[in-house]
Length: 431
View: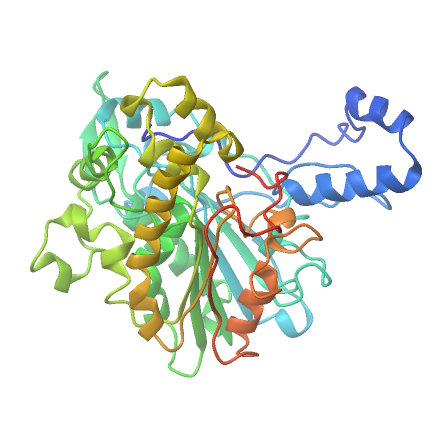
């Protein structure tokens, strides 16, 4: 459960892979041209950095992987000792000196076995990392109409290969005797340092983002990121689907606490944790966002679903908690949940809302807590800004984040009503 190996981004296609799959072509035969165009647009918006057919012109160029220079000397390496990497797409026009840094997510590894398995994927080794596409990838997209506030910024997608939200600092031994490098903190610091030399130091605006485990990393590193810039630079943070809760699962066990406890102790996660929290609480408790946000000074936007699909499946109803087939169906699709199960999910949502009350008193902060059954909403065009995007106060996520970031509205703090009250929560949203 702790080791999530499905990447949020898919690699760029081989140059020859430009035809849609046969099944898609078969569907097109029975559709009118107008409906086919709509389907293609939704497909392009629904999966971040996934190769897709283009209606006009040539497909965009993939963004190549840049490996960190001098990684071994800096002690900044992936779990298997390979150098970490990132994808940089340069900005243009009035975005030439504006930077968006996105920290990739992908779960955690809390045991030697989990981390050893993770070494054999892009979440533990740069040997498996490929070029990617930023097209239709929500906040990373370059279409001004779909991403008006950030379309022409310098955009960086930092790959995640340490298994502890860019925060560990030690070494371990795998069962085969090989070294496990828990150097997430060094990876974060070294990549940011390298980007500073590539122009980030001259930024007039900088935004640190991330989703899932990358959203937690954004929360962990927000103040450090801000401290790297002169006082006159606008620096903010956006944590997407990173507000993980310390709640009991349906069997009454704190199973997710055990996962975080394993991560914190196995990978020596301590330096990134707030000193005020460590003075009174266990390090594991200080790894949860409810504690982290209390001490953060940098303006932050919290984007999360109150019915986060990943957390419902892995925090509230993990495999260890129930073999009841009705719960298996419920956590697969919230529309399958009965009234009793919805009450349990409502309790989860209420815990999140209560933990976020501290944000109400933070003047420069924002939040968008919808009631859609989904996870990670900034990287998917269909969630970020499309005709079927979730809306709160008649604003899409892109509009709400833009209003907060550019201060077009005095306060952007929206919390949705309980499921299933919001008609804009489409069944097509990624889960």
